[in-house]
Length: 79
Image (cartoon, rainbow, N blue to C red):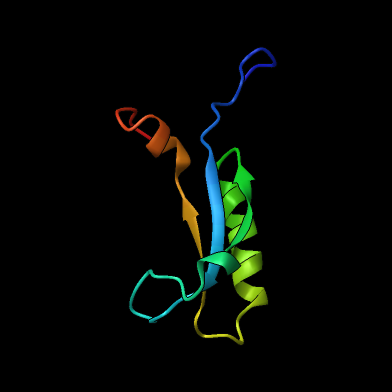
């Protein structure tokens, strides 16, 4: 990549909270969902996700997710 080329921004959201059931994706209390942040690429989102997931390892119901916002914003784009 040259200095004039810009890396494509592919937004990712990291969020988490306690789940109702370990087999599902429903949160126990929506008012307590933690929005970790929005990241410009998957790699940086994964670093944040992993840090949050490891910090809550003692709570089996706590889960963090990476949401591919770029897919929601532009579903026809292949990434």
